Image (cartoon, rainbow, N blue to C red; front, side, top):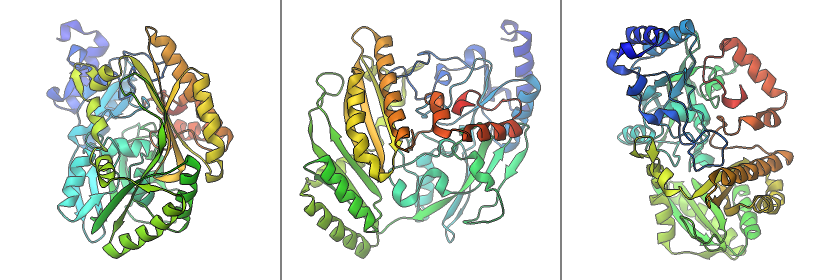
Length: 477
């Protein structure tokens, strides 16, 4: 095998196999196609390559010391390094360059400690979220972060994007749940922060690595909040006459001080044909509360009064039950059905599908709705749904356009529609993304998002990673 490699590749492999066992270092044609791209697939409205680049090497570290050693080697060899978790990132945050070393952290999956009294857990970055949740439930606790990708996503990936899950309003984003972490800097230095609920001792160092997508350091472990398994969870579904009435009712429910652990409110639009024919209909709301039985009952008494005032009609219990039971099902379409080909690639082969997830001041949501939908249609793209997720300020808009023999044109139209919608949100004082991060998909809009803050971000990057080795090209860095 070495005979087919150039001198630089041979030197790289020899150095890496000194840091990790040879069986845990892949180079050349031993690298599976899956590492060319994450869940930013060809069916999305992105101008990026539909193929992606194979990295120069993939390493499977099992300890923090091995991660540190690989980063020191990468520095000597002038190689970029990209951290890889479950490959479920939707913004291309784990797409490597052809000269990159990918660190697949999924063999770092130990639960180092669970403190039942403090309701905390310390786990390594490569553990799958669902596996961590199962471990916690054995001790009467649960993982607060519950995204659609939970059966495949890793703890480190969720921290890197500061992801939001179904229970985000009640339990916070992934970053909100991090108490302390362990990270390796570009030069191999291992940094550990104190895992406490509150500290007023200057810069909160752990936040440097939350939401920065592995550009400032590679998270190898974290201490996070865990939550007691609630005595009761009660979810119901409703149909509301208009989006405006539903929005007003939800605002009052949240202003009453109620804290739903699940909320999804969405209107759908008629989309003939395609992989999912849809009919327009009144908006539907799925709402749930959890906790001690008296608290859940009291929450529902208040919420039902608000919903009755909005003329909401209860739907059969099976509607809410089905929503909750299938909330993770879409991630299985991201599994490979052939090398480098996912089920989603096959399912969406004749359509370009994408979404915008924007955060807005509550007073701007209705002002945003009609122009955003009109902007999508202006670009020849069909809106599929417009809704709110976890809280009234977080807006989601899904859209699609058939390929009709010209995928490039369809992708360009969807990309233009997405940019139009995101810029409208920014103009209203909102943020262009609240759940999936930036990666490369939204990097071209980061200056408009951060303004002079981008220069501050780049200055921090320059101090921690002066050679720009860590996940280059992401987040506009």
